[in-house]
Length: 359
Image (cartoon, rainbow, N blue to C red; front, side):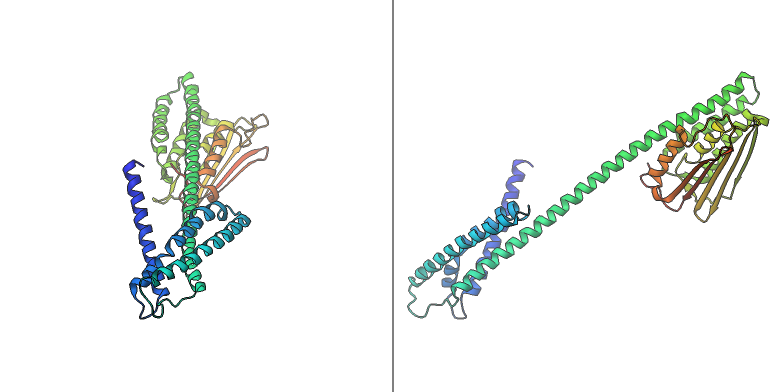
């Protein structure tokens, strides 16, 4: 805040405080007089109590409440409050004495037009102190609540940014991993001068377009994800040929069904990488079913005795599990099993829920 802004803020506070004490003076004037009392006399008498009222109020508002009451130093607050009341009561008594003497000195020889007792005056002064203190407490509570809410929002924002960064890091890991395995497939075919190699490169180009551009979106059509699964399966069919026995079934997919990109494809890629049967053939069963907006995705691939076990610990599966936790949190169920003969993955996903923290 610059100097001019500070002076402006100070001026506003001074104006508000002056207006408040003017209202207090009018309050005293109303309660310290009676019907036929001279207004000037009552105002003069009431003005004697303003300094002690102002002093006592500011002691509570700017000293005792913030330093002792709010930090919960209740014993110290009580002792200082008693001292403040005793001192202020003494000043109120002195102010009442001089107020009467000076107003009487103005020439009023008849009945003095101030009918209130000292007790009533004390109650009136402390009522103002109590109201100002209560307002100060409310203001402090509101300010503390606002700061807590702001701090909470900052913490949530920081957590969100960390999750976004983690999600981007996971995506960066998944994409090269997927690409590396696909290139290995094409490389294997190129060594045998397979005529399907150019077609596979074209299919890889489509997959790269999906990986590099479509996955930047927070959501993609489930139909697109499934189509790219089919594209990837076609690539692998050309590599495995007769050594691959794959069965892929998918329910009709609604046009509006959406999913976070690259959630299903890594599961399929993992089944090709780690799967192998004892007879040398790779058997894979993939099934995608939809019940309203609940998606069930299952993959079973064969495992031979010498097949390297992934146990859900491969880079692809490990990352996809973490992505599911970040994106769908409580809206998914993932089950990974290894029963020696088969490796099973089952994913249940609520597509009606928008993924949290999707970027």
